[in-house]
Image 1 (cartoon, rainbow, N blue to C red):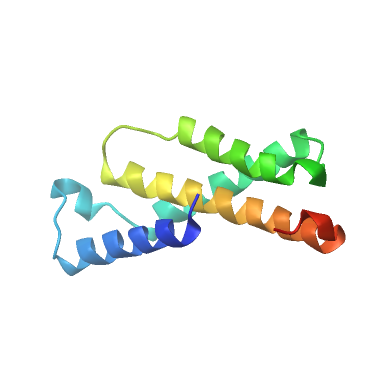
Image 2 (cartoon, rainbow, N blue to C red; image 1 turned 45 degrees about the vertical axis):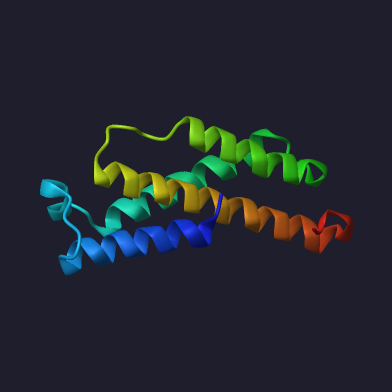
Length: 115
């Protein structure tokens, strides 16, 4: 998951829609940062729950990152609306932030888990 790319894509999409340079039909009227934030919170929750269920073992922190990616990508919503795409970007970003936070915690407590 690429947090920077996801957030940049969201920012470009959000800015473009509201600036009127790109139109997505009726969907452009309903996009809000709330949709991204809801997705972000959901992605964070999923990653934190997966970490707790995995036993919170730093030896598996990089496998955990990959597993979160797979889980989130397999469970993206797909109704074709822009709102859903923005929500999915939020989920991806939230999951990425949570996994990077865990990797940093493992790195600071066990230097061998730093990449």
